Image (cartoon, rainbow, N blue to C red):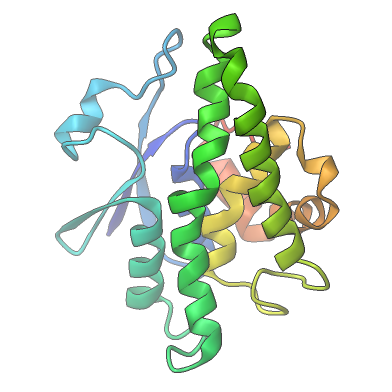
Length: 208
């Protein structure tokens, strides 16, 4: 049985969604953020030394990092679905999006969150952060031009992995500036598997 160590309002929601898309049975162990600090509870360190979520146990292995989890679950359990043929050029694009989501796209969005907590002390950093957010959201918006999903007509694991970028952009009130991203987010949030994952996962404030 696959177990997801699930933290509310976190990237682990997309792992639940992926498992629903794959039609796999799984169980959830729930963890709650500290109401004041919004940090993960120390209990997660007993699961993985970093004390972060998502963490998945599958077949005796403990998997961390969203991109690695998506890639591994699709490879192990996807029966060739939710990813392009590994011999095709589209597979290279698929791998790009899996890594780009956390390797590049989320950095300025997370900096925006942390620097905003500094108040006036963080003001000098905001122009550069805003410029980088616009750079990355513009890139994703352009990539989605004329496409239903990131790779074209076929929904895949890359859409799951990149979903948090679109949702966080919405939480910052920036998604309306990028209509292709906004339409893409609305499409994936309407998927039955996404809705089923919300029901199982519980509190998730980025689903709007």
